[in-house]
Amino acid sequence: MEEERLKKTETPKTKSPSPAYVTATWLVLIVGVVAYLVGLYNAEMQLNEKGYYFTLLLFGLFSVVALQKSVRDKMEDIPVTNLFLYISWFGTLASITLLIIGLFNAELLLSEKGFYGISYMMSVYAAISVQKNIRDSE
Image (cartoon, rainbow, N blue to C red; front, side, top):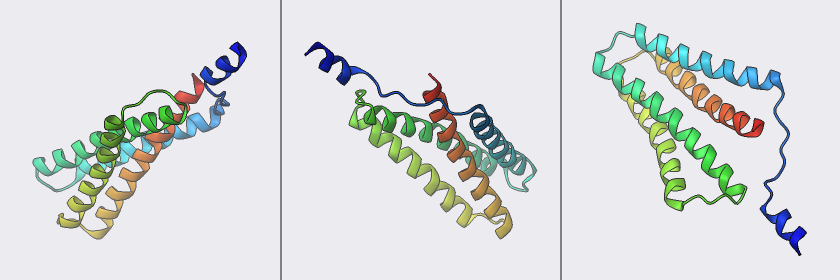
């Protein structure tokens, strides 16, 4: 009986990610964020537009990390309020939607719009992977 209770409370064992994978995810995150920021710095747009895109990057990175953590916690039967889970989903979808709307309405070349979109998505995906690696390593 006691053994059964202990099995239910134990968190599942996960393999730690390889050092090469951890390094690759950090590298992709850094490259994505730096590319986005360098492109933003060199862009010929007003400062308030640059602030908008910078804020979207920060909001997107935070929301995907919160989403990854809350989904993972729920999978491991760690208590997560539904409100936090829904806010994380909303933040993630809102940040991506706002980027799409902003780029659609921006007076940028199509290649610039593609650059910002790809570097943004690369950054948020890498943030999810880095968060997962950190979680798996602990």
